[in-house]
Image 1 (cartoon, rainbow, N blue to C red):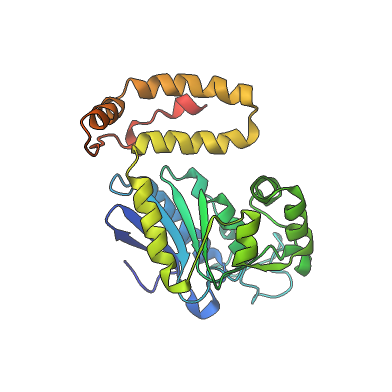
Image 2: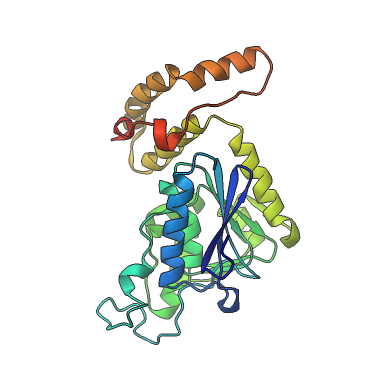
Length: 274
């Protein structure tokens, strides 16, 4: 693990902990954070030894939003930028929902702007008691991004999403929990341990089955029940013929832990999900 990089990756057995690592700037988002997350997530997605991923922040913040130190035209796509700060590179290209493993956002402090929208692309969000979340874009004359106009209403309901996105208010962890924006809140010092415990729980399930379920969950955001039922059937039939299915049933009958042999980055046919 390289500690001076803007994004670090630590491997704890089967769990990869990915950290935004600009603590002196409250992990404010810049092109290096964006590119670093892309690279880290692609790496752990393709690593057969990784079964689950945690994304969190170094220091006392998760992410304080975009780094605005460049001035008022920070978000202008036509701005002439320094070579190390291009607008294209600020937009992440490999997102948490594309990772073949479960991804948990462990929101360990302030999470505003892109620090609030990026966790929406994770499968599960948990928070520390000191976490504060805000979709503050409209308050600085900007627009929420990363598909948040579609995702947030599905997570917290339309009225709550309208209040959060249009008003840009910053809410505390308990309010986020009551809305369903996060599923757990823990004392600050316990957050990472609880995230690891949750990740380990997810690791016990069959990796290819988990990856298939994850893809279907995300595709289901834009499918009807009938379309999803039609899509599930051939994937169900394919999984039923695989070695991990046989192993899972046999382990259950023998009252032992299953030993999974399949890896989603290698063994899950992409054409099943087209």
